[in-house]
Length: 267
Image (tube, rainbow, N blue to C red):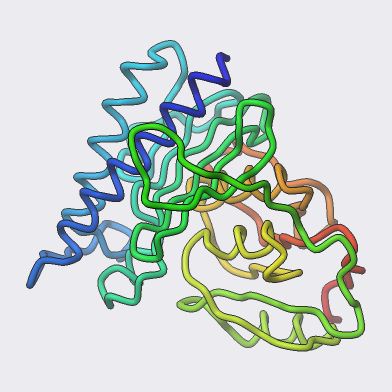
């Protein structure tokens, strides 16, 4: 893989998709439908998916492509592929809360090596550079990259008082019970893959997810977090999260700064 080219293409497509999404988001109204799994989908999801898919297929025709909006047409397993969630956090989009993202990632041998997460309503853009390090680019965003700064997890999280981030739309009692095993100084709620990015920048130390997610929900944020020194592990045995699983469904997981002392599942 040409990682220089990949970085440029993923960044440009994420920004273009974000612009398309915001055109619809800022309109007076937009259509919301339910998919077969009862999750919402909008014209913004579909427009962003079409834009990103066309761009990735043109740039990397030899690499398999997996996207949320075309999931039913994909095979059940893969090891090396591009994976896209064109609008992660559709519920946040529909409720006009702003916590939605464009996610594009490259997975090789089950590992998300590169990724971009763009939150257009927040004006925040995170991605891995060609050498695998993660950065945040400060806007205004143009055709070519503007000023960036390296991001990194909190190198010495205080286990006497951690900053924890959890899902805004999918918080439940099991998550609260697990978080309750830690000493926390504060809690934050965020939607979509922004939670990974908050850990990646050191704005949070721990993000546990005890709920159903798919690989397109997490791959880009996972890549950004890994590129900033963080880790994502399975909730059950604390082994690294892998990608290309049958059906592209994730287990429960924990994203964290490595200095956090992980606790086990409550009895």
